Image (cartoon, rainbow over all chains, first blue to last red; front, side, top):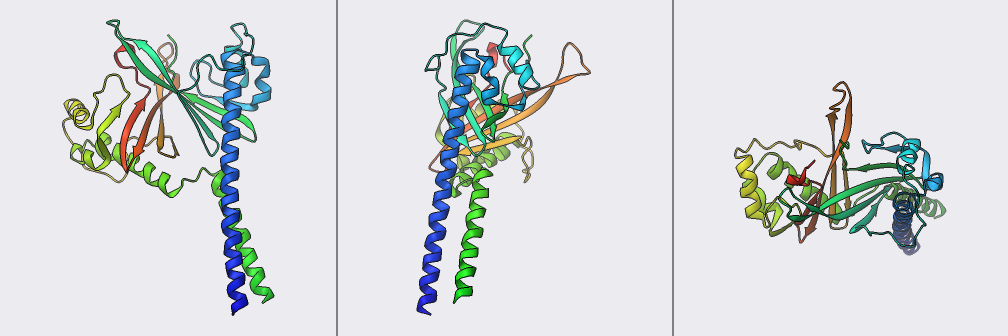
Length: 147
Length: 156
């Protein structure tokens, strides 16, 4: 009986350590996903290097922004329509909040606007990105169609 | 004795596999689950069915507002919404507008809702527009709110 209890205790210990190791693995993967998204955003979107799109984005990428909805080709056509700039180590503007959960990475931006009376105000935009097999698979934001 | 060890090892392997799956599936911690439920219930009861009397159950009195058109603080916000929607509707177990996606990370709960909009140039076509609501939970109450509305500036 003593040995049985010992085995049970060791089993439980192994179980708990396995679970915490795996949780750490999940956090590490989330951090990786977030870094992937931030690099993609900086190089491909902010500095316009659409030739790097295949490095970051899945072949069957899905874009939900209504101004360039479709796949990677539509995305590249949209962001490739303006000339690329030299890639910098930092984004021109950092997201005000970034977090990763499971396969999702969220970027939150605080922006400055001006209302009809000329009064300044702050507002937010959001980007949600889904990562799959180490590539960016899907993107949503809050844009409506441009007039 | 050997068979016991095998059984325990098997069980450990099973549970490890289970938690691996859970991580891949965006599983909430118990605290995240609580935060997510609090925010979803707030949106269901108070903002969806307009039961303003339940606001103090879900929201901190000093609720911080990042939406430019809405007032600071819980009670002024409730008055503001009551002016537009004065009549509560019967509470339902389901939300009126269930978000398409909910992501909870720590104290932050993000909801994304998708609607189809008619294309003004071709009414037979539609396009997708997403709306985001983000809430920070503190001590069991909704404490801070952001969304992507831009109000009178020419909004969504």
